[in-house]
Length: 238
Image 1 (cartoon, rainbow, N blue to C red):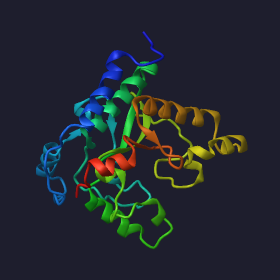
Image 2 (image 1 turned 60 degrees about the horizontal axis):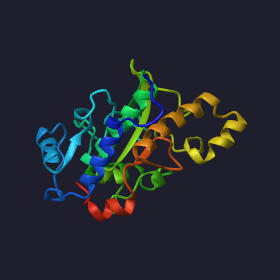
Image 3 (image 1 turned 180 degrees about the vertical axis):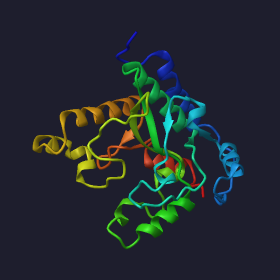
């Protein structure tokens, strides 16, 4: 049975996540050291209220963009960290987005390219792009990115064979073609096809129906909650 809206099991995680957002968080230090391939670090994250998103939905695909060299920096800044961690409320909303997507398109899945990003990694990225043309696309670690709070994801869509939908440009393209606000213009000029724009709409529909907030300048980036609420509720994790 194909559904055009939310079912009970799709909506439930969203309400649960909102309850979690207002619940007490475990006390923690802001200076947790990140060590490549550190199981201890991952256990620490779990203790801080983070969750590996695939423990909530194993059909979510994870291929961390910055855990390899196929990215705009041409560098692996994550080392041994291969899982996507998020604050539990954000992870539950992501699971709801994937459930909604599967209801409408049973052969499609959310693919996560980035989730929680330790500030130590943010510093690595900043040092690689500082004083280059790419500097504007990486948040200064002094105040951080929503990724550093565990409340943002970079995502696309893949089919059950792992083949990604064509979005017109890759994640971290960082050019005008990546900006949702310019899609109509590039569709009219032929730089984006109808199918590429339709694929982006499929992604945005699933993510926003679940509660994520999109960006006007990156088709792949979504915040789980309002930035001011996140900065007030959480601290950056190193």
